Image (cartoon, rainbow, N blue to C red; front, side, top):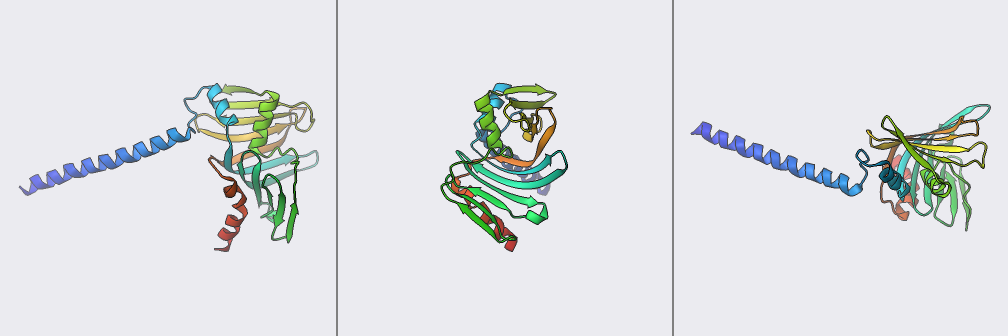
Length: 225
């Protein structure tokens, strides 16, 4: 009798675990489907449309800038939401750590607490061409008519500009199997990589204007803990 009760309890436990597993699986499957971020089974056209319709993202990038004389490296955090709300903060190198550039669609603010820097340009209607931003690449791709190709699971979206010898061609790399954007490379007219951006992490999300503009405050609070 005792063994029979234990057997029933065991069966009930297995059923309970199965139900919990099923609920968790359905939740994550629904979440991924709803987000639409899974590119593994998408066609090149669908992937192209997905990238071109990104309207906000949160990223940490590693930037290598090659000049004729030296190489400079940076680690930068970015937040962006369309049409032109952006916030960018330097993590490394240490001598300019915390340097933040924030644009709210009208005013440009440059701050760095270490350097006692706090400059605001009101009614700033022109933002210089900023190749560090994924949104900048997307706009150029749309305007100049880019191309998309794939080789061994690596998708390359390419746009040729031709109006700048130092920024003649830009290529965005997407790893289909890893399901993520991996890098953005800017080449000069001789096909030499001038700027090499590696995406340490990038989250395609639904940031609001307030999320982006609050970026600096959140960072400083975290540092104080």
